[in-house]
Picture 1 (spheres, rainbow, N blue to C red):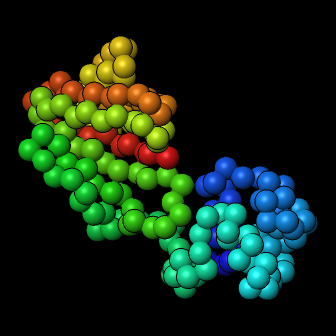
Picture 2: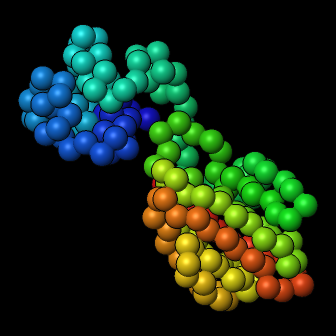
Picture 3: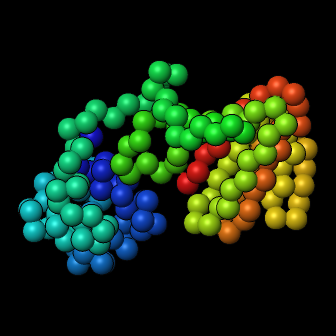
Length: 174
């Protein structure tokens, strides 16, 4: 990954505009724009100013710069995060720094229930397999394969598998 790409990703993760980053780092919009497109090389001092605004230190910023960023992942790249009697959660892509989204596969055992509070995250869900009952706060709906939902932060979610077969739900947290 190039320095500019990484700065752009961090800026967007922090919800900053080019103008906002430039203003807080006491630099120009044009400089930040060129930096994000790798059209200029910043001095160490200037880079530190930018990274201070982004809330990251130089060592952390450069720690994974040499890693090759991939776009395509296979089943063997998955890692099991949680495995309980009622459900299993698998991370669909390796844990990478600076991810904007975190896709996981929730597999519910037959007739099982999964509960989660969305406190700071927002999320999207898609029923890959099965038939589930979804409750968000006081609203309850039945979703079949292909059904989807969106969750805002500060919501409680309960998913019940309504069948005697496992159900799979793709959850994307961001």
